[in-house]
Image 1: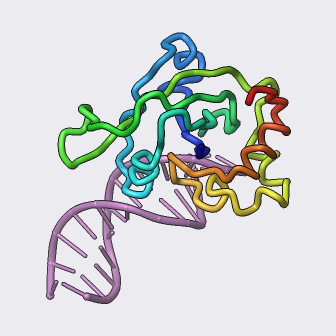
Image 2 (image 1 turned 45 degrees about the vertical axis):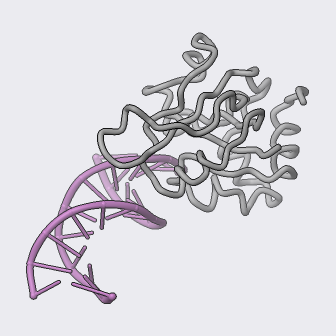
Length: 138
DNA sequence: GCCAACGTTGGC
DNA sequence: GCCAACGTTGGC
């Protein structure tokens, strides 16, 4: 199983909305590297749900429940989306400031490529971030 | 095919 | 609100 991190501006689509909706199509990605990451997602993969801009913190965990398929919100280009399902909130949201202070997370894609909205997360980083956030799920 | 100009994203 | 990073566009 692979791990990911997906970003959303809470003004546009928040964790609360994700929880309320349950399963949500993750549309609107218009960046080739992010698209490549979306296309690499497999059923059952987990992803951190990150609030950019205002809050800048990992606030929840989602699971990929449908692999990449055409993003119908795209007017042109072959963009894709996946469906994600809320698993649960991060007990203690892990802020970007926390992440940046941790040397073990220095090469996290989130830090190195701040503009990439869909990032891979290694298994070690995933465990580390779960520990920081008090996530006790699997 | 190069590069300057410009737009967008996201952190601060 | 500003700025850095980076992607895209268009002139040459």
